[in-house]
Length: 333
Image 1 (cartoon, rainbow, N blue to C red):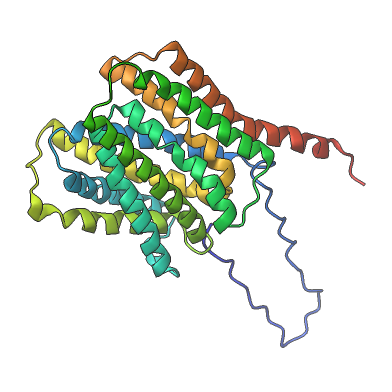
Image 2: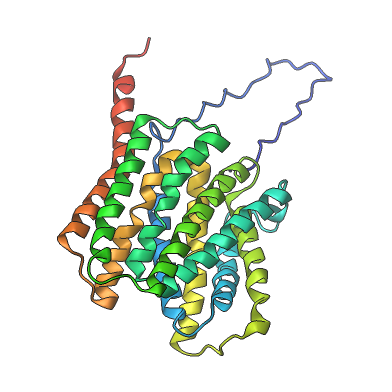
């Protein structure tokens, strides 16, 4: 389990034994994600989709509820799926013990700021545009991972991240055609840009935490601390949610909790730098939801950008499989 060190077993060495002591076989070194198990790819894709579903609920709830109340519901109702996940992994309540309390505070600082800015952006911008602005985060995560985590992404990972960003630009181009941007749009775009910076910093901090912390531990403390932060806004005025508004608020929490679990599990299984292109697949989910719920159909340029995004996300596992194939075909000596 990521974040846990294997226990050393103490054998009986004081008395001689008749049979030679059996030694456990050496543990094989873990394969790099690009050449071995691609389970993290599925986790990352599911996480991207869940975050878009959460964003949809936040956008619908922001029509009536203030940002602070949305932060509380988003975080508080994320706790039940996180606790259920920990119980399923038989890590509750033992997983709540942390070795990096300061690291959790840093992660919550970055993540909390990113959450608030994201909700502000969703309140002022269409779902697809707000989602696309968030895709600056994976692009910024690549140099951040190099500087902070000393990761060395290959040319494929860097090229895929840049190609995915080009795809986002293509998808954004139609949104900026037409009349001059109003104040709300400018404010929403500025919030989205600031959110991308905070999100990139938070993801690097998550990768640092996975060295000693279980994924469920990271997700639990993020939800718990952000819930307290959102609750602090209660004196400033909350609505009394009923019917659809309550469903939107609770849905944001449940989908957000599941999204953080899958994202953190993926972070523990692969370097941050090679996961960047998979974040761009969330744009595909946003296009689908815009078409189904709001009746917004993408333009040909947006569809071309979506194709570029999908290709950038697929190139890493395909390249890893091709690189691993020659070694697998070599005869054993």
